Image 1 (cartoon, rainbow, N blue to C red):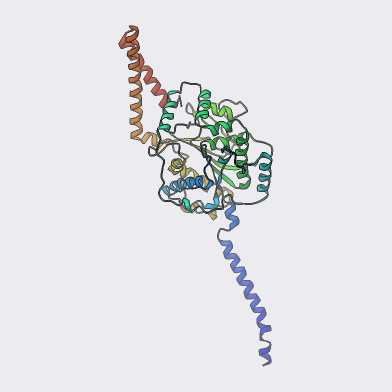
Image 2: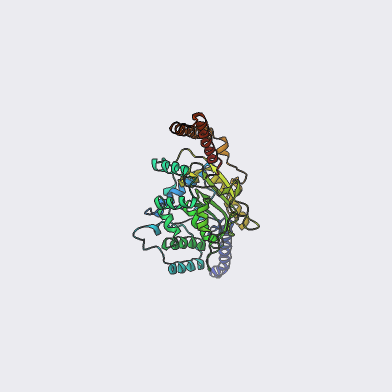
Length: 425
């Protein structure tokens, strides 16, 4: 009986040792898999939307972008490669609403918000994105207005680029026009971008920007202010951009530098994708050479890729994101950034091993029979139109009809060749 009375005292140390062992084992198992800290250190994909988004809810834009993004990642077999915690958005559309959204920060409020973001480690996306898990991606059909604008742009290629830019932004891109004036809309947009970069901290970022978003990000990187967040941009992916318009880049690069223009020093690689039929997009090459100088010593020259998506309105973000070139540019850059940042083991990159777009060169243009047929049709139409105009001019002025018809055909054919060679675009 005395032995029984001492039994609890004997077992207590044994129980403590056993519990300590279980706790240690649990901690080692938990540390074996990706932890929350590792998730917040993964490279970040930052989406920056374009113009014409005012009066749209953030969630609506998010669903549109994530649907296109997932369609593209699914197409290359990397649907689950990039987790939600590694995707962020910056929404600046409310700055262009009338009356102004009270949530749009003043410059001082923006500085306070950025300071708070730099002092805290926070994810940029919290809410459920299950609405975007759609297998079917619906594209908007191209409207008569879009087709008319395309034709107008093609017809006005002989006009001054600066005049074209001013007319276009005044008629069709009022939010871009207001942003270029560098007023409250400019300050609010810049604040949103700076806040996103501040939240990202030292994480490598893959910036995926569309249309006006490409201008806003480029402007932020090139025209820096004292105290700006300094992002580590592993890749800058521009979709449907106007940075190739000489008049636009002259408005953005305030140093008044000529070709080649500034390549943002924070960017390690730059991929620009433009749809051949995107009516407000310009390549970032000039006579076959990049319009932007090489970046830092460890950066690569800009990569220019043309795509052809005849199934949709060609400036739509969904079509760009769903394209395999865009999907591979994002996935490969994200895995490469994970490798250099030491978080590769916490990803599925070794399983997917996405192929990059570095060696792609406008494959769809050369392989597209419909595109070649369209090229020939436009050439014949413009040459025929020129011959008809020349014949009519000769008939009214008693000039040699055959000679003037040939001259008109030559002018029309030359214009067709200049258009499709990219000289006038």
